[in-house]
Length: 492
Image (cartoon, rainbow, N blue to C red; front, side, top):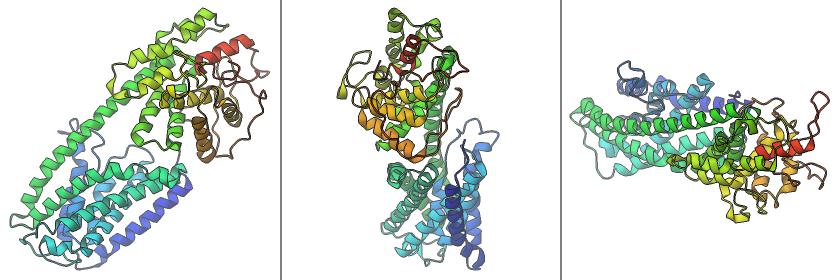
């Protein structure tokens, strides 16, 4: 994985400083209810570490996520600074999937501390401590006090929403800075995905706080955690199922890479470029993931094509080319029964269609071609041009983008081409897999100047071989390109 860019590190540093300012009063103020804070902090830490238990480790799936009911109970029971302090141990111990792990743990801790402090302030301003059963905005209130229902629900709901919105805002900010994405694109969909689970956690946290304040105290509060933890475990099982789906996809791609060694890494890069296009078009995160999977699996039908044709060094005969052109249909048949692929199946079937009707397998035109197939078609042709193959050397990325623009409206959907050009112009092209020789990594750049008609060959035809590479007959170049980019160029 690439290191975090300087801007992202600066963003995280600012968040850490803000979190430190939020937590500081809890450390310096002698009136902080430290015993309650310590119990809640240990509870949160235990919820995050339960997956490491030798007896339960194999049964608790990775990615169970942060168990926020305890943090939100702290928001309802403690002053804001103390609630922020409670969030730190569990946040440091939470699951980290991507590296650098240390930086991400610090980020999660700062993020949760800030969110807890803001939620606590909102709760206090609306009179939450009084409605819960006494106290002030800076006191935890007396034990064995009765909550004032339903009035306590309003400040608790506002606090849960504030907690969710702060987490979402910080997440969107780091995405915008780290990936150089527009803020609107980075935040799109985050709030809608996070708000419901956070509100459910808020309700559980409120019930935990109410029971904590009741005559039954801590034991009753702990009983609230059990059903909530079970529900989180079931949700984590869903994530484990998604992990199994990803493993299925990786196995299929690996099989294709073994069979067609000349295009190793191509599938992952097409998935990456497809996701860039989808994000630029403003697609939802769920649909973006679908188009990424479609890009990764677009050539899975090559498993049904004879290996001798995929590795043939000479020109393809018309009959052999027709066999190659069956691979979208083979791929569609292979994934037909994989329910989680959804819309990706039609993209696999139609990614070699062309908007002017010259593609295959059905010669669809324009809007008849599914949207995701039009996305994958552009990503496929782009990677075919910018990576070295047995029949052609890699072209510079600006040249490939200019050629896509030249073919827009004939072979490719102009909106998809423009989205890829804009995305690479802003973020650069950083391929996730670099198995092919001479694969390029370029920084963000200005949009390329349009190439003149006839100045460049089509995306399916490689540039002239260099002196260190034997010349390849023109017929071979076109046939080979037809295998990997579907003959995307203007000249076939």
